Image (cartoon, rainbow, N blue to C red):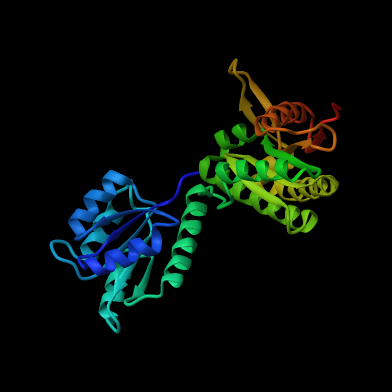
Length: 309
């Protein structure tokens, strides 16, 4: 991965020089001398972070922040506002305009670097996070897979998703469906934390698809806990009549009315103890096969890959 791009905006050439000297070893740096020039450069270069002065000609820091945060393609970019010593109005104005952090001039280079690192990490996580569950998304999931492969230790990846979820969504609507996904996330978080330990990882691929990664010997306990907790709450997602019946009525592809059982959860476990895992795509291929098989079985279940090399 290349260096993160940082845009610095200040009308003081000395401050720009200090910023470039401080940042250029770790980051790719672009510089502008006023807010309008900074805005044009932000649109052209798509920086990962902006450092901008509050008091500038043509367009000041307040106007610059407001304009950047109004642009749907740039509103996620974190901004560090530079203010004069004791200028409380500048700090408040910058924060009200959308600045994510501020520093008082003159600043300590090491503190600035620490704040930049923090904001870049926070932004990366928030952009990758699933908006519904706030769990890590696909980028983080792929990174975790690669980390485990590189570690040369036995690990397992669990692919979990809900059975009969489309029929539930069709009857109860997306608002109730979203609630089910959030509650499923809570079940998974609890099981992975309790049974997987501090090193376990949980991500949200999207929709009703989740992934967890843990030491191989802890995976069965995680799956058992997931199934136990999910089957407890599954009936609560339904109205009294459907809960009592144990099914909902839905239409199949031929438009025939069919009975669809209550929501259950299926988990496919890809274990490096059973089969040597050498690349990320291999995990996805085996996981898709196992999950398909698990979903063909009745009720909440988990299955493991049993193939040996």
